[in-house]
Image (cartoon, rainbow, N blue to C red; front, top):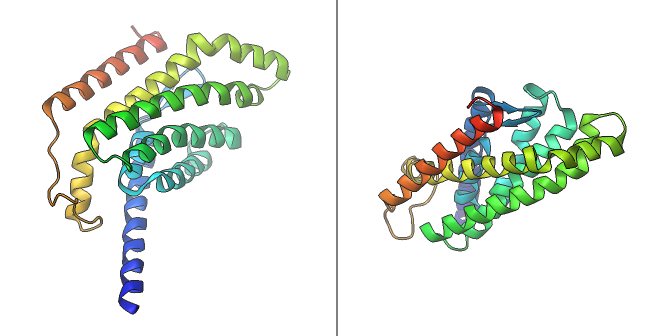
Length: 226
């Protein structure tokens, strides 16, 4: 019994160590890789949270989403509690959806299906939550603010959230295998069931790179740079 308790305790410590490490990486990216688009901001932190969700499950992804959103609120964000809620919802909608599917089908196909579902979930849910919450952030008359949000749905909110989600998808596709392999070598995760980590398919890498480049270009168009 003592051995079982000790093993569970050691596993919990390793899980917390992985979550803390990924939260630290996500926060650094949040600070140094922020791309403002109107009153919205893109940063690749959600991709790191999703990698954590792939390794540890959707509950871990939800916990990391809330922690990072809180850290953002008290350090670099000027949108207060409303911004924290929106950031947490955005991260959870993408990362938890993707992780939920992937943890039930741990394969390249499962990863693509999970990430694609995350793109759809985040895009749809953030349109709804922007409609409900953003008027309070804009201030003034709520009815007028909500009408303003509706007018931005197609021109800003839909393309921004879709591109943000697809960009996250591409980053996860590129980084998940290297990150999980490094974490396993560090002894923070058990070895894969097959006994060895699968190598990334070159076509998979190419698809991720094309997605990422496309998202960057479209973000620049959305910002009016090109």
